[in-house]
Length: 65
Image 1 (cartoon, one colour):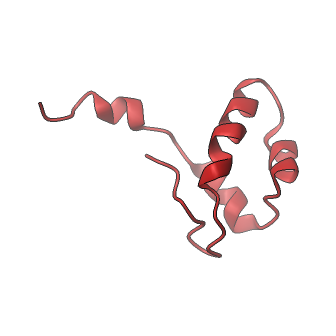
Image 2 (cartoon, one colour; image 1 turned 180 degrees about the vertical axis):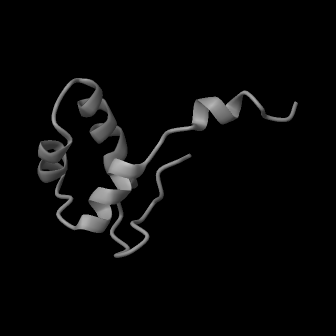
């Protein structure tokens, strides 16, 4: 859905990094290099970014009117 504000495991704020990460992945960069550059060193934070699926556009179709 929406990227969490903080990592579930360690509590590090990560939400501000998501847009940069998503933009650079779509541009063709390797996720490992992007996460290293953004300062995501812990496995829990990396797993949060790698496992995130953006469903916001799919769910928005079913909103109540």
